[in-house]
Length: 143
Image (cartoon, rainbow, N blue to C red; front, side):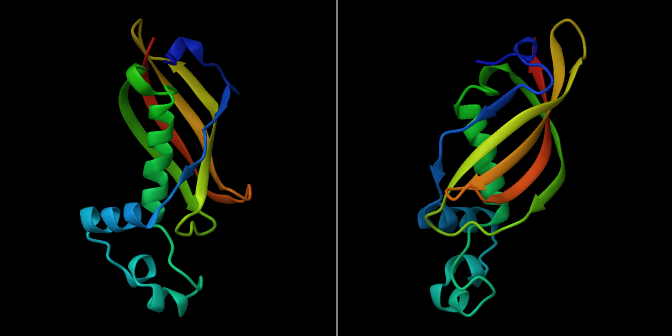
């Protein structure tokens, strides 16, 4: 488990890959109500701008946060998710693509004796090492 005091400016981490299967896209569509044909209908998506179905952008971002929690980068040290800034979707994630998350500490600020605020520059890339999304996320972590 990584705690606030284990981190410093420019500390970086890379996740293992995670494949985005059609079942996850369908489950996310059901949970959120975003049942756009671009995500769920092969024929309609084939006629769309990407030529095939894509994952929801927010599903990809949610999975990126999950990868960091699962790996212990946040895990038990996490007190609160404090926000996300400058979220950009730069390329689609297709059904069956694998994503990798790269985080680098860009802000490291003690709040008191028991907790601190950390901001990460987060980049999500696909299996071809092409950037698909980027954002800055902030967390309050235990010291």
